Amino acid sequence: MAHAHSHDHGHHHHNHAADITHFGRAFGIGIGLNLVFVAAEAAGGWWANSSALLSDAGHNLSDVLSLALAWGASVLGRQPTSARYTYGLKSATIQAALLNAALLYVALGFILWDTLNHLRHPEPVNSQLVMLIAGLGIVINGATALLFRSGQKGDANVRGAYLHMLTDALVSLGVVVGGALVYFTGWVWLDPLISLIILAVVAVGSWGLMRETVQLSLHGVPHAIDPGAVRQFLLAQPGVTHVHDLHIWPLSTRDTALTAHLVRPSGSDTDFLHHLQHKLKDEFNIGHMTVQIEPDACTHGSCDAPE
Image (cartoon, rainbow, N blue to C red; front, side):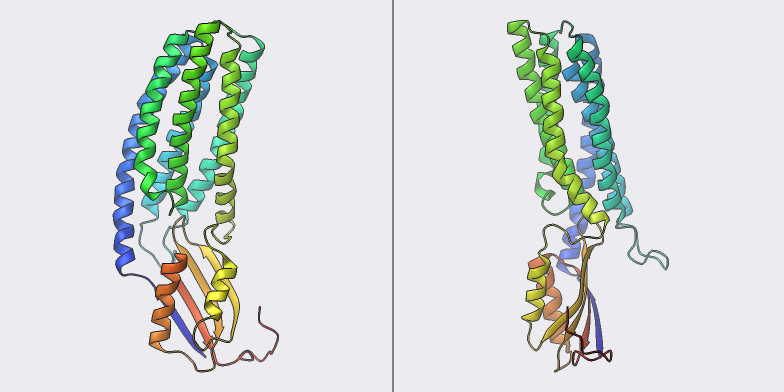
């Protein structure tokens, strides 16, 4: 019986550190810009008597909190390992992503209640002010989304920030269009109606991220990895006849671990493990690998069929 444990600490490790530093700046800039905008949007919504603008301000405020939580989690995730936390605090990014998704839907619930009140009792709206502030939102949210665009495919936290900001830019565009319609038609009920549409778009658009973060929090296989393909890859390796006790789980929103028992009658060697380590990283983005090499399927005194 042979055990092998491997982590990829080479070229990929340094790129990862550079990415974290870059997105740390992006989080800081995004939070600063959006705090200023939320204050302006809330004041403008109150002054213009626009539920659509106030709804968007509430949503943007939840996004500021989301950015702050995601940033804090990324900092915790870089903390070194310890005797108690053998993987460090990487999983803080998963918990932050889950909390962010939950907070978003709580905020949507409060905004929905206020919007329904405005729909039942529509009031005059300062459409020109609404269009001006929402137009500013398109610029700020669009610019913030661009800060996270390059990293949104490899990290649920960064992807969450990117999708939130991109959605906010589109929502602001909807508010501008709604303000123009109210201005030209005088139909004040359009403002809360547009607010309802905004809430629906945000809720539907965020559901995929919510489902993904719940999956990660339950140690499910990350959605970008096909566990069947990983099993077939391991079975295709030279000398491997069976694979069992295969487990794949997220350490963070961007780090994945794998453990497996490989039945390989010829035993283990350094070249085999080195090849396996790098292929798992390159093909599946699995950077933490622990495998147990067994000479036959009856190593533990049982000849049960492998998983």
